[in-house]
Image (cartoon, rainbow, N blue to C red; front, side):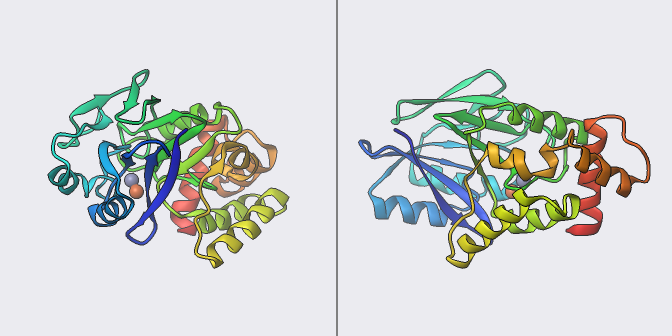
Length: 259
Ligand code: ZN
Ligand code: FE
């Protein structure tokens, strides 16, 4: 059975630590900083056997070189369609990653939009989606396009509702503030905000969430809901022909007026 724990890094990043109770092997996802990873592995007596990368940004890759110095020769899995020098096992849609030493396979999805070659990893009911889908929100469009990010989120939204969503940042409360702008009357947003505040007050992560929770309250997955369409059209001051247009209006609204 896969065990998944967060290693907090920087102000609000989560590096995900993958282990199993009967093994000393450990795999990390998106080690932006080596310091907290090395400390956690040494303290737990774990041996790093592999690294997974979702996309090229420094807060997800910055620790890879130092981890390779400490554990030479381990595989670094990451997107084939993105320039990440340390990646030695390039991956694309349809590939499966066998987690070294853990005897568990994860499927690879291409989920471009935040960046042009972003990938996600899925298996054992868990989704590692980097900066594509966040709890209550989604990543900004940097080197991909709005159309790509919308399509990628729709692809992730079609996974089983019980899927646990392990995103790479603690942005939940800020994201739910914007969700409230979009759907002020939503009981799902209110309930989630209350739960997230309790967790943050205790210093605990609000992630993973579930896809079901995201579908109930994350406006970027709810582009076919009448209330969300109406809010996006009010902001855009025009009628919006499809989900991709609603998505673009929401993302633009949040970038320009909320963040
Ligand atoms: Zn990023
Ligand atoms: Fe990031």
